View 1 (cartoon, rainbow, N blue to C red):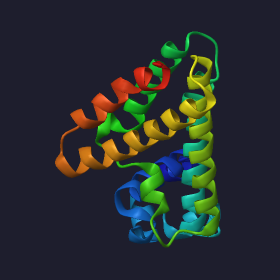
View 2: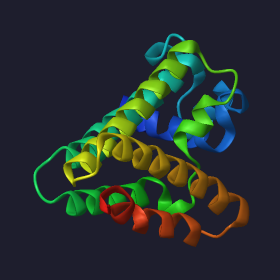
View 3: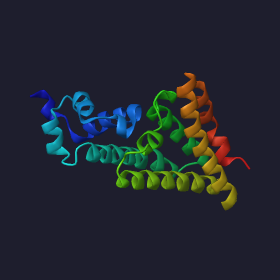
View 4: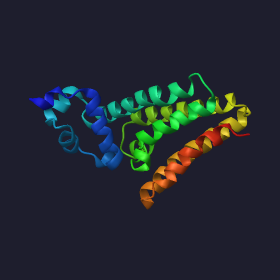
Length: 186
């Protein structure tokens, strides 16, 4: 059977897309089976905890992506502005230029397991710390760097919601384009 060759990473991506669109409670195991092309029994074989384990796998998949595509570049070599621009490009891709809902928001809606809430909280803190570190590196005081990092996350998350609600992706794109200045200007 062709579908049996689907790997867990692909399943996590497909589950993530569903959770982004429908939230944790709004996504059923039937939805997950349809999206992956697997029977529910196959999903339970790979994810014995069912939807809960699939949501955790989706969150872990996002965590791995953030490690490689956000935290890696932010903490890597080169000028801070260049690293932030690289992260901005990655965020544009991850969020489909503002067409895809925010992962932190979608997965944090009520009904999810406590482990999921803890993973999302950890992701938020890591993102905040990475933005603050690059802002400090660019010469901002510790306090200002932390404020700007928090402002950047609020702007990203808010622009995703506004872009989705209004159908205007430009809101998100302008926010992302402004990240280098926000995190580096004095």
